[in-house]
Length: 231
Image 1 (cartoon, one colour):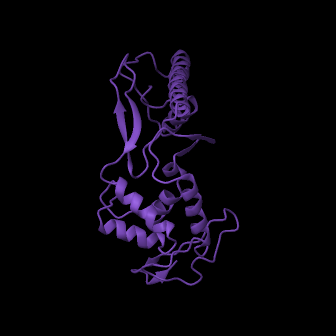
Image 2 (cartoon, rainbow, N blue to C red):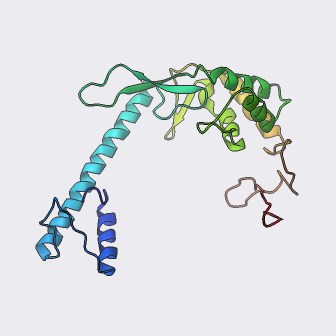
Image 3 (cartoon, one colour):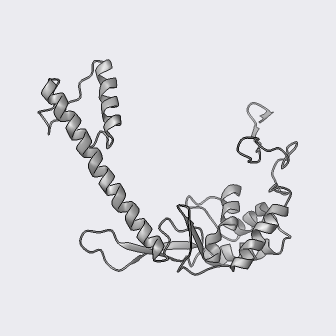
C-alpha cells in the first residue's frame, strides 16, 4: 500500500472512491487487508506509517539542502551556463554530493548575452535570437523561450548571490557578472517600456501597457491561426 499513497488522507480518499465504484483493492503482499473491521484498522495504521516514513525522508532532504546552502553551495538545479558536478564518492548509502561549476559549452554564450544587455542597446528577444544562432539551446534542443531568457538575465545567481527559500547568501560558485552589473541589468530592464519587448514576430494592440490588477503581471497575447483570432 505504500505504492498507492504516502499520505493518509489520500490513501483513505482513493479507497473510498474505489468502494463507491464497487471496486476492491487487493494487496497480494498484505493479505490481512480485507473488508473486515480488523482489516480496515490495519489498513489505516499502515497508511499512517507510510506517511510517517515519507515525512521523515522529506525532513532529511530539507535538512540536507539547508546544510548545503549554509556551506555556500546551490541546493538545486544549476542555472543556464552552469552544471551540477558530483564531488567525491557515495558513502554510507547517501547520495553523491554535487556542486555547481561552469558549463564549458554555454558559459561564454550566457556571458556574451549579459555583455550585450548591459550596453542597453539590445532587447531580450534580440539577444535570445543572437545566442540561438550561435548555438545556445534548451535541454530539448530548442530556442529558449522569452520568459526563460528574461529570468536568466534577472537571476542574481550570476552575480554570485544565492536566493533560496527566503534566504540570501554569497555562493562559492564562479560569478559571471558583478553585483553592480546585476543591479544595472535590473535597471535597464525596468526602463525598457515596462518589460515590453521591441522585437516580436507579431504585434498586438496595447502590448506592454496592459497589466493584471490582481497579480500585477503584464498581459500577453497569442495568435490562433486555425480560429483566425487573437487572444
